[in-house]
Image (cartoon, rainbow, N blue to C red; front, side, top):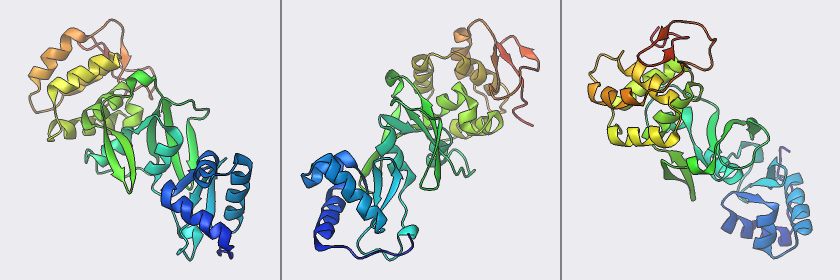
Length: 267
């Protein structure tokens, strides 16, 4: 709908109340609670507001509220991180999105990476012109995050060290092994580098393919990382891990780190 339709005085009061307490996004259950009405009536109200341009349906039962002062609802958008917090909690912003947030990459990614412990049916969802790429993780792996405020919404994002561990766990979440290697180098040179915290997270995540990829890459950087390498070496487990699980199972084996170099990380 291109233009905002007129709104009754009653619905204007409802919309004002929703704006006061819902912080841009509202679902049917929240609307019913905030307005003191049953879910059926709240659903019909939100649907009516959407048909008039005062709300925009993002997915079933979830609406973006359009401010009363807006002139063009199609031009009104919402921070995708707020959408992610509302729809996928408990969750955190992860991977390439967290890399951007912490200044570990200059590359711009249009999609938003989200790790969630919530039940999800799809791994990719497009909502309000933003694509969310989702990874389901156990609730016990919801650690190593920091809160950031997006307007009035508190959103969890993986801290720099957890971000690094996540993309070493699966480099596809870092945009592939080549980009993940650049992120690793940026992390090691940044104020965020914390060797003890990195080792702690590696052990807590429990996927020792992280150790293999980290060790292999660290030995190929010009800057000496012997202290970290010495800590990682005893953690190398049996079996080989692909350097990039997104690539084919081809390439030389590196016995020291039990990694198969199926993609050249520094080409």
